[in-house]
Image 1 (tube, helix red, strand yellow):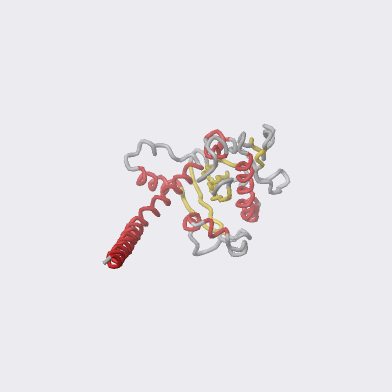
Image 2 (cartoon, helix red, strand yellow; image 1 turned 120 degrees about the vertical axis):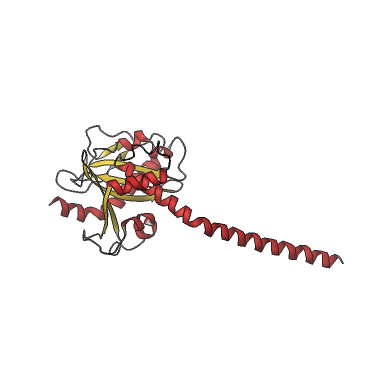
Length: 243
């Protein structure tokens, strides 16, 4: 009788685990489209933020719809290039931006490099590049917007998932991101320099340097590496456009 009772309990528990697992799987699949849409909306918002085109979003009753409308209105086009600076037909820039980690694992010869173009009558045309790297505790990512000289930064947006509050987590604060505005990724001879994040404080006259976050040196240097590694594949394209 005791063995039968144990078998019954074991069987009941097994069935319960299977049922709960099936329900969780069903719910997860049902929520997947919503989760994907939320990711898409968040990325579109970050692209708009990199070019200061988010006015009115906080007051919007339906923020996702408002972001979609603003994105369609202000991001005039997007396309994908390769490391030689040639246009890749049939590739979707936004799809690559959503799966940037997987794309960056591809050999540079076959990698797709997405570009988003923003047009504003007051500020002109901007070229927006997605970036992704490794912080101290997890991934860091963002968008870099360049002026139409392909060397001067117009705006940046950075984000993280696990950086230390008050230290490395400061990369997504307005004061830190604002320091990149006006900095240049090429020197006067046309050599790619990217941006240096200086621990001891950048020279105010340095067109390629910004101050590192106090106490967040590792994350600051990781961000510097992210910018260099992600922007460098675009150099051939930038130089073609400059000529």
